[in-house]
Amino acid sequence: MNRIERLQKTFAGERTDRIPVALWRHWPGDDQRAADLARATVEFQRTYDWDFVTIQPSASYGVIDLGLHDEWIGSADGSRSIVKRGVNRSLEWTELRPLDPQRGSLGRQLEAVRLIGEAFPNGETPLIQTIYSPLSQAVMLGGPSLLLRHLRTHPDRIQTALNVLTETTIRLIDALRRLPLAGLIYVVDQASYDLLSEDEYRVYGLPYDRKILESLPDRWWFRTLQLATNAPMFRLCSQLPAYAINWPDQDTEPDLTQGRAMFNGAMCGGLSSQQHLNLGTPSSVREAARVAISTMNGRRLILSSGNPIAVTTPLSNIRATRESVNHIGATSA
Image (cartoon, rainbow, N blue to C red; front, top):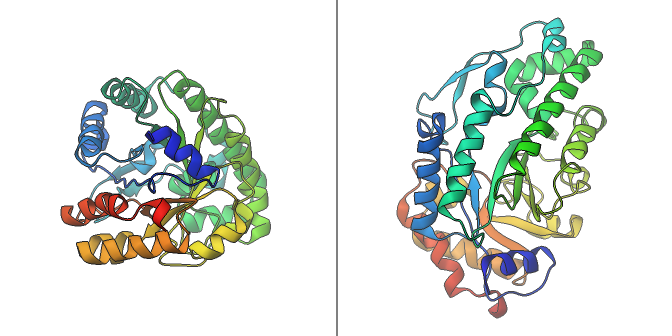
């Protein structure tokens, strides 16, 4: 069974020869140049032979050309810290304009995708691009507290900005459709009970997320939703058109069993990026993988971590993740 067949059967809830598996990470420093990001991504895939490749640029790549400045200061997860926001006053939300995806940071990302595609030319290795939701991009531009204040005091200005960010994202997708991608991983981190009410997300998140996901080309058969929060609005987000959901199931609710009851597609998780992968041992990684596969009865599971892995993750734990699915087959669960 090849990678595409394995993944598509997993999305459909059918048994496979083994559980599909993949990890991904940020590439601090390398994520600032297309060729270096491509090389790091390709070498990671060639080393571990994952069932798919997640192309992970710096989180701010979609908004860095809107006045935002960031830098990597050594965070373990590889993310860059924002040192200057693009928006400081409510009126500035209305001054944002759609970006040209062929230029600047977006253009560099297109080049990185092109180079990665050249390294896997036959289409047998599915490539998916990381795309951040408009509300996630707005948080990067204004910061969480400022955005929340303006969302409640100047909602029309926030909606104007969200429309612009949505338009830029759709333009990017239109440019990406010309490249050899199988789909995307769509990051939603503001659909969180720690940040918004469900009513607020229904107004400022859900319509824009749905518009973007419904704009995807038909040939993008791989569509994963990443709920990057410890308090996800899982039931609400499960209504979005995706085939798999990735979230920190080992560190928060819902767990895999609860998630399976709320969503008909695949669960992407089973491992904690911190407890198992960064701080654990190969034995604890293998045991966590065994438990996850057993919990899901060998179906509807992509073994992964709930977040991108830390740059400090021991290589032995990464190897154990990849090797575990060879020893714990889907059909034996």
